[in-house]
Image (cartoon, rainbow, N blue to C red; front, side, top):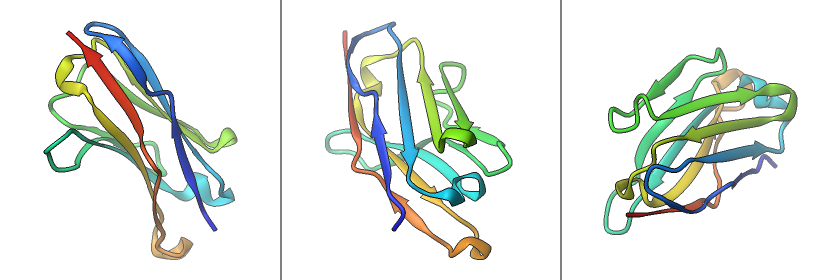
Length: 119
């Protein structure tokens, strides 16, 4: 069974940085697409950044220029480097792994990691 686990959240002051990690327990990782989502209190979950199995990246407008998503297939891990954090970035950040039909059409969510940005 495929599992993903986020780590790296915490409390940081505005303007600071954090790096989140999303580790997967699967040898299919290199064939998976990974998305980072976040959900703030009282708001819907939104896509923050994604990286395909071909390392094509996509970012929400609100984080462009501040966040960078990268992947390390050798270690089954995707990173989200977050710089110049703002209080509005406060949320629980979730990692989602998906695979194409050739790899069982999986969709697996992690449990989330809390990011709190103080003013």
